[in-house]
Length: 603
Image 1 (tube, rainbow, N blue to C red):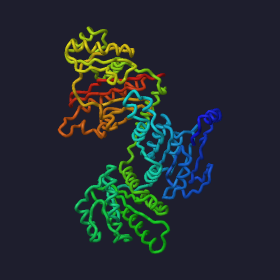
Image 2: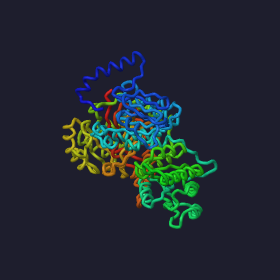
Image 3: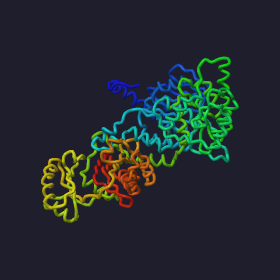
Image 4: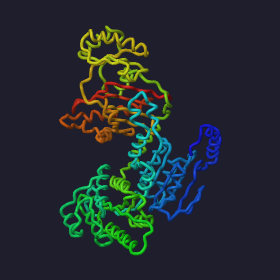
């Protein structure tokens, strides 16, 4: 519930008194401003609203929104709950506390987590507890980014918004990100369903097979699978031959498989189709589209029941897991979906969501409790995060001194006293130089005309200094002379301590930063291997690996530079370190941070 500022000010003393009383007496408090807790399996309903709960299940929901919790309990699509917590303002107990508790509870198959704030480093402890307990967590966090406003002077601040940082954290913790409440509940329901393991001795592939009785659904499924990056392998010759024996003449053995309505309700034939698809060497999971209209009776209901029996039979015979999905959300019958779940077959509502659930199951749980705890420790060490506007910026030459001390390669150069000194530095460096305004008040020098590049004679250096020196003085800065860095691919590398956890942000630099809006965000600490994998996941990665006749770049050097930037952020009282651009040469040529902006933290 959103309240006006006046109401919040009036309620603040009551909030503080509640927290103090809870601390004095060691009381766990849910809320305030919440609905409470429901645990169907224990017949517990500490709930401030009307309530009708079906039999208990394996999904736990923790929601800061009471309405989300109320609506979830009213849902009828095979969703059954172990526990529902509407946590409200979380004055005493937080989402982290609930996660840690649920991670150790028998019968919890997955947790759906709906958040309106980030929970701070303590939330990472809760995610670590679930990772340690093998309990999948699906997360939906609402709210717009404020990191872009906090770091408006740096490109990376807007690129690495709060929501992206949070999403990166969830991924590192082995969790699954949901785009809306529907997806949150369907993913949690799917992941909570006990599933049959791959049969011993079977060699399963990593592709998906789609099975339906509709050509239109086949096409939709194929399109959505491509959008999600899900492989639909071409079936092996032996698989196609076996399918041809089972299918009517009008059907074509393919993936997706449209078995047509001619064998609708044939339990044995449907079961064999599911098993045959599952036995294909390229298939790791079978997705069956199944729609059920409401209110069916008599022979119609019998035929739909036969289809369900056929799918369940095939799932029991298949060496790989099977999942069911309706094509429209409202066509997933509650009783039917619950029956599928009890047979070890997850049932999702809606074609697009069904494929999203299939993708989540195929990705598997890659959670690492140790990694979660490592991230949490780094987040705690980066305490005292600055409010908007706090913390001083360093002039570029001081920023580069810090970077150089941390092992980051920066161009040789120094601040100069006058034009003659600038010429002396050019002579010392022995080649083309750049002259820049270096001032704490200036982060975007080019917009002020504060950068002159490629100077290689004394008169050009003198003239450039004459133009830049007054500009530098106006902004309380100096003139910096540096050796021109060799050409290379422009990349942005930045580290921030202003989100829920400190992160490194990487992306193509220059105009590509804004045009592609394409960045990789990695929670700290992060080693080179982790950073290089993240770089490889950029949409622009082909430009870095080499594509269309372009040579690749020195990815190990880029990953090492990013690691050192992240370590500098963690080791020093810094809120932000941005190197933009970093010029990355061909393999073996290294990477150089040619521009840098650093903001200290107000501790």
